[in-house]
Amino acid sequence: MHIPILKHPQIQRAKQTLKLTASRLVDNHINLAVTGLSGSGKTAFITSLVNQLTEANEQAYLPFFSVLSEQRLIGVRRDVQPNLTFNRFAYEQAMSDLTESPAKWPASTTGVSQIRLKIKYRNVKGLSQYLVDDSTLTLDITDYPGEWLLDLPLLDMNFEQWIVHCDGELTDTRRAKLALEFLQALENVDFSAKADELVLEKVAGLYRQYLQQCQFEGYQLIQPSRFILPGELANAPVLHFFPIPQVLIENHRLNLSNPPSGSNLAVIISRFEQYKEAVVKPFYKHHFRHFDRQIILVDCLSALNHGHSSFQDLQKALDWLMRSFQYGPSNIINRLFEPKIDKLVFAASKADHITPDQQVNLIKLLDNMLRHARKKIQFDGVVSESTAISAIRASKSGFSKVNGEDIPTLRGVNSNGELITLYPGEVPTACPSLDFWQQQRFEFPKFMPPELVNSYALPHIRMDQVLDFLLADKLR
Ligand code: GDP
Image 1: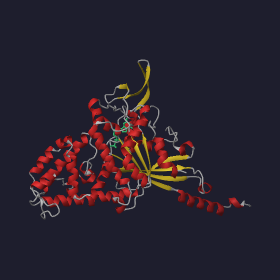
Image 2: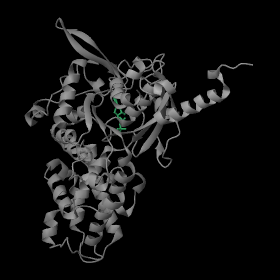
Image 3: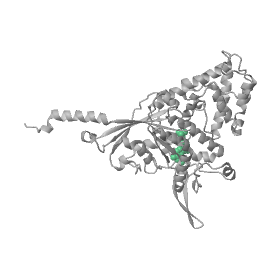
Image 4: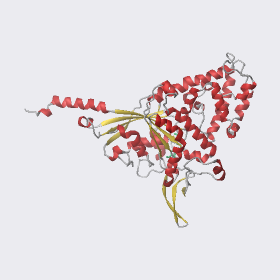
């Protein structure tokens, strides 16, 4: 029997092998990290990202996600996460919360969690399109608390420099008031006496309580971060240290560079050093160094709601946090390892709390907050973009007639379960002055999550543009 040469089984097998090999060659991989301070919207963002991708060919609305608009997306599925020691990102639980009636917001994550997706797509051009029918992008998404990045500057501080920084924070009268119990307890510590583990644990507990109250009051620059987000370190002695105000150091004539051996002071200083070595550095060495792309969520609107000092504090926290992405030669990260992150998105989250006409202002506000730190990032060759998103849009925008004029409004369900229509006000493009806050307040509303009717795809604002910026170049 005559078999045409191109259909010969051996040639078919060789072609198949070639295809597989080429397919492996073009298979690519992205380690995407998602971060932001507590409450900034990380859980909602990852839930929506997984939802948009897995629903992309079904009901998701992603007009600006090019692989989809070019009809090259074949399918997306979850796969076993690569790092089995991390928590698995609880996507199913989050979707079950959001599809309950009434829907509820998923519980926030507090440590590191991970999820892996396999994205199968058709190639657009290049050699691969002649060899393979399709390719696969492996997307690993890692969620970690932004607070952990606030610890990076500690690596460049010794104990003495750290306490100068902490003293500076206590010049804010609201913070000083919250620290009262901790400061009083310090008066009774004999720093030169033999170390007493229980005393150190108790005072460290009061310091932690002060930091937790700061967080509750809307402060964002809170470090050492593991005091409020200890993860597996809750109760570990490495967290049993605290700053000592300079006035106490002077009054007790404490020698920080040569503390009495085995004294409370010596143990406090050595734990501060241990915290940097055994907690802060390993995060950068084992996790951060593997990230390729990063999204940082910033909740500017809640900070505006909280008032002037919270907003200033968010600004300071962002300056600290951004040091992890400034890879200039003097940066501590460069001294630890070579960073890989090449694309960075700053996203003002929860943009469904404002009317569409205010979205540009929100992006300008975020840009303004990042202005100084951003310049260094651009200089260091990382491509960055800022945007305003809503991972899970809980309001609908429209217009209402007021005195014959059309006013842009939002409609959503408030936390009492009532349907409300409101104009939440204007977003400033830069941090307003203190007098502004003394005269009026911002009151951006809180909404319950949307009820999903006849659809499993989450409504959103600009998730498609974020997906395109982060993934499109790897889906060609
Ligand atoms: P995380 O601590 O960074 O993981 O923050 P979450 O994702 O848990 O978000 C904290 C809270 O912010 C949620 O419980 C919601 O109340 C709210 N939130 C987060 N994302 C959105 C959003 O896109 N729209 C609205 N309206 N609220 C959001």
